[in-house]
Length: 187
Image (cartoon, rainbow, N blue to C red; front, top):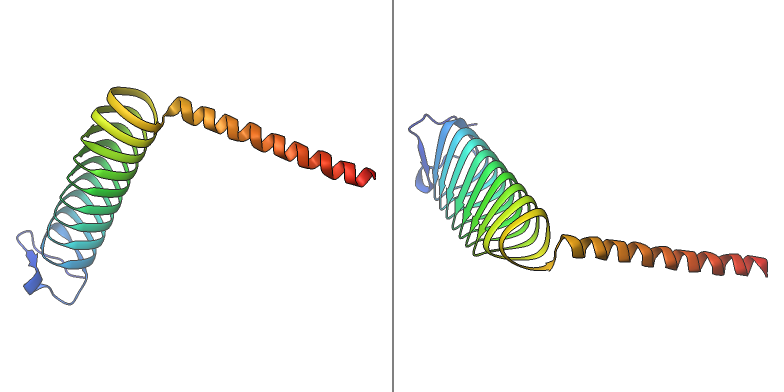
C-alpha cells in the first residue's frame, strides 16, 4: 500500500504498480485506482473503486463506492455514495444516502436523505424528510415536507393508496383461491 506524503500528486504517468492509497491527503489526476483511504481526497479525471475519507472532491471522475463526511462531485458519476453532506453538480448518481443532499443539474436513481435541495435535477425515487426544489422531476416521492414545484409520477398519498389497493387485491385473490380449494376438498 502506498502512503503518499501530503504534497504527493498521483498522475497517470507517475502511477506506481499499487492500486491502494492511504494517507492524510491524496490527490489523483488521470489515474485508475482500486482503494483509497485518507482524510482528504481530490480527484480529477480519475476512476476509483472505493474511497473512504473525511472529505472527497471529484471533478470529471467515476467512483464505484464512496463513504465520506463531505462529498462533492462535479461532471462525474458515482454508483453508491454515503455521506453526511453531499453536493453533485452536473453529475449522475445511482444510489445516494446522506443527511444533507444538494443536486444541481444532476440525475439520480435513488436518493435517501434527511434534507434534500434540488435545482433542475431529476430523481427516480426520492425518500427525504424535507425537500426544497425549484423544479423537481421524480418518479416516486416519499417525503413529509416539500417546498417548490414538483412533478412526480407517485407521491406519498398515491404510494399509500397504491400499497393499500395492492394489499386488498392480493387478499381478495388469496381468499378466492382458498374458497376454490376448500370447495374441491368438499366434493
